[in-house]
Every structure is written in C-alpha cells, then in structure tokens.
Length: 426
Image 1 (cartoon, helix red, strand yellow):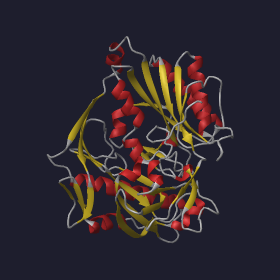
Image 2: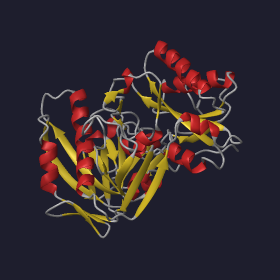
Image 3: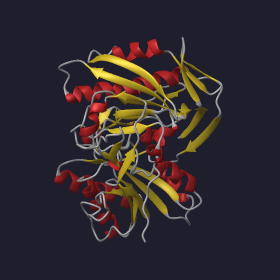
C-alpha cells in the first residue's frame, strides 16, 4: 500500500464568507460550521473562536484536538464521518500548523488545559498551533456518554469538513509512505533487527474510549494493523483520561512512534508491524490480551518491540504483562511511560512493574507542579478547573494565577513521546 500526504502549511486563521486556504491562511465560514455542529439534536449552543500562538488565551477543559485532514477520492475518518472503507492508501490532504480544539462544560473528570502564551507553552505542542476552538454546550438531560459522543463527533466533522473544502492542486510539500506485505518486509534488510510497535489504546468504556474504523476498541482483540491506516483517521480518541497522557485524535493522526520507525526503517531497524492492543479494565482480559499480543509478535519473527501506553494506573499492568511475556520469549522490549512520582519526585513512579522491564523511556513526572499566569480570555468553562486532573481546591491564587500539576496540561507527557518532557538517570 502507498499513501501520499499532501501538506498545506497554515500560518494564520480568519473568518470569511467561505472556507478555503489562501497563501497559508485558512479562512473559515463560521455559519457553515455552526450549522454542521448544531445539526446534532443533543447540542444546545456553539461558540467558535480562534486561538493563535502568543494570544493571552486559556482553553479549558479541552476534550480533544484534531488535525483537519481529508482524502482526495474517499472518506477520511472511516466509519466515523463517512463510509467504512479501507484507508491507508491514495492521497490525503493535511492542514499542518492548525487544529480543531473541542471544549465547553466538562464531559469527564480528566480533561485539561491549553494556554496560548506563557510558561505552559513549554509543556504542550498544542500551544504552537493555530486553533479553531469549539465551545460546545449540551442540552439538558443529555447523559455523560451522549455528551461525550456529541462533542467527539462535532470535532471530527468540523475537521473533516474544513479539510475537504481545501483540497486543491496546490500544496506546500508531500510525504510518501509505503507498506509492503510481510513476505516482502521479512526478505529485506535482513541485517537489521526486526521491530514491532505495540500500540496500546484505552478501551474501558468509562469515558475512557478509543475507536477503530468506527467501532469501540473494547470489542477488539489484539490486531495486526497497517500503520498507514493510523495516518488516515482509522483511530480516533473518545477519551476523558488524564490530559497529560491522553492520546488525542491529533496524536493518533501524527503517531510519533510510527513516524520515527519509518524514519529509521532500512537504516537502523526493519519496521515490520503494528499491533493494536486494547487496554481494558478486567484482569482476565488483560491476561488474554497479553498472551495474544506476545504471540503475534513472536509469529512475526520480531527481534524487538516498542510499547506505548495510554492513561495511568491499571494500564501500566497491560504494559508490564506484555513486556514480561516478550522478554521471556527472547524479544527485547522498550516501554514508554510517564511517572507519577509525587510533587517532590520521591514517590513510587509506577503502579506496577516487573524485573523484565529494564528498558523504559520516561515522559516525565506528571505530579510536578507549575504556576501559570492569568490569561486575558478563557475559552470554555473556567469552573472546570477544580475538577480536572491536575487542578485542585486551592489552584486559584489571589493574583489570578493558577498552580496545577503537569497532569492537567494537554499532551504534556504524551506516551507516544509527542511532547517536550522526559527524564534522565543521574
């Protein structure tokens, strides 16, 4: 399979009478977006704002971030905002440097913050984007799960709609990806270690959800997938997990580990597969999935594996179970995880562990605190502060500043490594 991603670089966003790209400026029609979102009967109101890098703007609580993308002759986000068809090939347009950000009164307890200026910008890549912010208010009587779905679908539909209006022969650069069948992959680069990526996603059904081709991944057994499907919107976030470790839809679309594996393929490694593994709540399911995942890795003939996690707490058990099985099969395994080491860094970093987990990449201590100044504008609902992860009673200071944990910053310690934080041994 071959995929061409045509990138249009966006340096600014403005409102206009139609939606298009002009000289790296994205112009959007506010009325078209309102009509699209308010078509959902569960949504009472929508406010659309633009938040640019450097603006004195705070967005809270953030539900999801989505990069506008669309396919030339097919539907992006298969099974979500279009027909269910195979993706991961053909031509896809991506609007780089911008995103759709969904916010409004809180959906779940673990949503987060994006500041467009100030010290918080050093912790999240989303402060560097030109953001179209959708502040969504639900109607009375809409349940939390319906609320989550309405907000999730709104962000996806707007991102897809905007990108579709911007398909043209003009683009700034193109990136080409190729994914061969396994027979071909195992025959090439025989001198290099064969590496598999184990792509773990939240699948708990408690507003901790991920969707693959439109279906909840809690219905999924560990599955070998084509990494090019990931770039084409086959996986989207429905999560209200800790903001710092949340894998947003943007993270899925730009999966940092898959991108890095492609860069190193044929040079340092032979990248041979991606296994999508659901992270569930039942112990029996975790054991079953660790057996099935490790078996697939072994059957592929892999020499090594990379595992990414999502969320914190019991998902670390999935991480460790799979690592233990792989290492005992002689398959070297690298784990990526954040640490919950307390505000002083002295607490136990991980809630689970095995002796076989001897190669761990840290994305930082989520309990570390940061003081951030007051912003001129707040988009969303500031009253969510004391209920989101990282916020607490006493977060608000007399001078208008906030003290929050890194946990509360969206994407601050993303477990695919799409972040600025890490840790070193001293």
